[in-house]
Image (cartoon, rainbow, N blue to C red; front, side, top):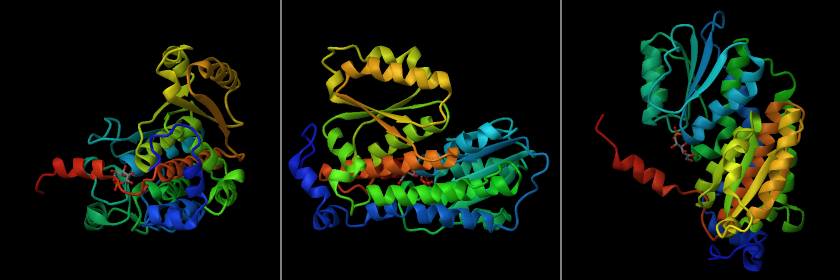
Length: 366
Ligand code: F6R
């Protein structure tokens, strides 16, 4: 177990390039699901586009995407990708309550991989009661059952994965539905995203050795430090949040995130040079070529200012031209990095016992 070491650890480095050791640490092949994100993106898009019984697109005033955790991130993806190009408001709803504006002229997309998440089910019921135009995305469970019973269009996606390892199956159907209803013109974005993900997997997959694998390298640098992931308003902020959650769940470490420009008005105060706490943290800054010009200037200045106060700052740049490709490219790099960090710590990245224990602790009879 190498979890206590800070910075590169020769044993952990050797483990990441050793197929037998990876197999022993990862008996359910969580890493394999990360490596199959490009296929999931293509298949998730196909499944969403194949849904023939969608509600009418005319007169939709807002889109609410319901979902928690690994399913809920698909709402953030939708907000970041569709939001800036859509005349209607897009909101990711992460809780029991539907926003007040969501009525008959709202499109409500309920997303739960297990289909059994109580917050999502509660908001889904409200949406049905209010007469909203509801579509469900699920890998089975109660949401799939209720959708069938109520005649709500259902995109049923392949099950058997951890929800957070099903990003392509969860995010792409809702984007496909948005496109079908005239809320988003995907153009070549989906094909571009999938192709770039193929490249990322080639570069960051298990077969790519540490010397040429940026995800393994970053994971090793992060050993023993608390990751702080910085993005910026829009897609890189969503990617930063995804990285943070993936560090929590895959590597079982505390992690934090924030976005420029907001963090320039508060959090930047938290890293004074010479503070004894700072070296225990490392900042990963997520960048892309489409940043607002002033945001780009701010990120450069912020990274420079933060650097003396933390263990290290590393920047990671998205590839691609479309916002979707950039966001998924950053997410994929974070999925690999967090999975390798878990493995480098000698930990199985798949189980999420604390989340399950919490769900059990508050379970109530139906
Ligand atoms: C598990 C994970 C969790 C779940 C969340 C909601 O891998 O990432 O955050 O996604 O507890 O469950 P689902 O996705 O089944 O609605």
